Length: 588
Image 1 (spheres, rainbow, N blue to C red):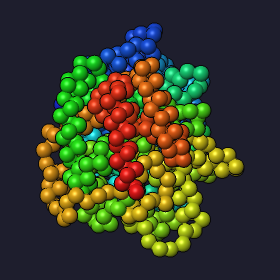
Image 2: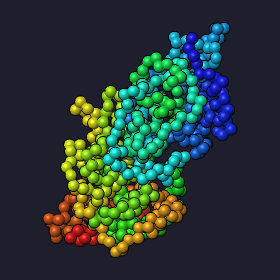
Image 3: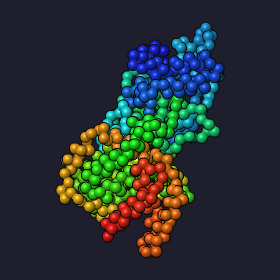
């Protein structure tokens, strides 16, 4: 007969967890089964019950880690790395014992349902349904201050060795099992995934330094068989984690999902609630009017304090500090004919010191203030060896990640001061083109083979550090002027690593101004801008172009946002003109 999960082992696991978490967290399947047997509308009731408990619990639901016990409720914030084919699963079943007593079970939200001892499943009674399958990875470049219950990570600096993606080894059994009503046994010991400088084989993380769990997420009750979430979306999932020891049961057949390492390495997460999230600031759980009002009142002080820090990091240069602040605030607010990304503000800072001390200051700054950041040393070796664009592997039915598979809001710092002499091979040339397309159009084409490539829209902020003008395009180029003569990098780093209360204030400031509801300028302001542009173009028709107007409009908009203004004012426009004049004058 079929062997089933030992109910005594499951009971002991519940007892171990009961002293820490309430039963609905430590043993959610017990509550699900209770609702299933007591309500005709059990599916709606399960959703309603858990949704209310999730709301009431606040942040008490533990985050998914390598140590999370199987069959417990967890919370997980991650990025959708791949959307897989739908999976057929057994939703309900009946089982009988020797006395012909019937046991009805719900195997939704589980791949290894607990069946009373002595009962055998009646396979003619099973009721099947379909569920969506996502492969989720740690958020690429996520900085330590945004993380909860996770190990702190080192700087997300990509090097030529770490960029080489590895596929599954030939001797690894990567067949994904559904484990439904088969010979299963829960793991008795904690399953750990080793996290080193190099990625664990088969995990398919985007950046080698990303810390956190990968998981296969199962989404139920889908409407119209359409996926509500897309590749590269950031989502928060509350669900039941399940790990099945591949050595403890026989795999009878493959599912129609792709091939993965066993769930002992990559857990399966049965989703009870999922939502897309727009920011990772743990201090701001909601952008309600009352929360934003408190932070908005302190915007003048926050802006001034952040400018002081930026000025000290960039050799005392006040003009560069202003432009870096606008760069930090920027985001894409619209697309013109699905081609031009409006609001992007890529920045090239030339005459940047080619020193390790300056690079450390810049990376420390961005790690302290940004939610997600990746620093890429732009060298010939890196360009030639990196895998930047995701590529579909049809043998494993997986999208293999590239280092440019990034979520919206990520800061990419390209360090061109390290560029050396050498020859680019075809892969290096393609990588350089990809970086150029990302900067210019905020879109990348993923390689799905068979002459079928799919375009993905982006919203990432790109900062280029270079000695001369960068070989890559940018929206704004400004040379750094050293106002310090001899910068004290140790003192700057000491300031950056102190006063966590100030950093919290500055992070909240950036989060709020980036999410302000910004209105179109009034008719009066629009008329003023039009007249001003016509006058300037008459004076200098060769240099004042439509691109000049677009850059001024974006600069003025970002300047207004950085002050917390809900719309463009006359002062914002005049200040943008003054900034651009100073910048152009510096370019000579």
